Length: 343
Image (cartoon, rainbow, N blue to C red; front, side, top):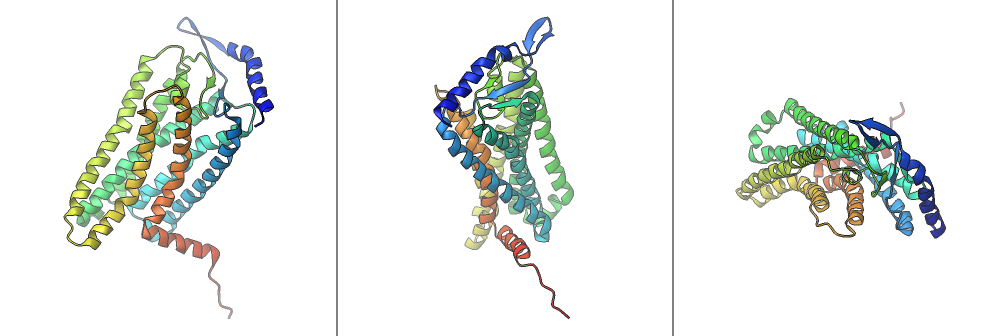
């Protein structure tokens, strides 16, 4: 974006602020508040030369994410050898990554090339809800997958009994219901909070960025955010750590080196994804505040929202022989369809 185009964006915002600031006035408990019909997404407008680079980077990563996760879902559905709990959970994880990136990246791509970086209220609500729902569901699902690996390694003889198809579907359903309900609760109360502005200093309707516009601090919203954060970050992470303590203890008691290597390989991909996911989440929410903290938040959010979903299918494909074999088989069917001999 050229300097003149950047100045046009700033001038357009200033000219329209007097009109936008009036908003839609309503009465609530005898007090005036503004119900915004749309929001400005500040994004990376302060760095116009960077926007083209970010557009190319985000577009390439988004396409790879869609292709990688779609392929992983396809092979788990089409290959009978992958009809096990581990791959059912992996298919759910891939679907979540597609939904998570699709909630924010298309809007980001449009705004990176547009001078009017706006989003309507309903679009902001959907974007916020999907991001929270997919992120919360993934927290629970990663803990479920850790339990699945614990049973497979620590109780291999009873694995098919404990992790039967019904239990597997119930655990996946609980993950989705928990994530979707907590996201609905957070989104509802966040968007009912009176806002004293509509300029979001972010490239997406991220809940913390939106709540920074609140006219007054809401104790109820703060309590809900705290409770949900405790339920969906430290508790699942604690369960994952406990599972891997038992897994490591069991692996160290295996006498053969080949057996230990095989046991490590079955949970190595999951552990890598857990480290990536929680590493990005904790760096976002537990880092010290600073004068440029919001800019750092944007970069971390972009990496978290694009890079991690793109890497998940790659990690599982590279570290899993069954997935690689199924992928080769699927590609062979597509590229070299079977020919029928003529009679």
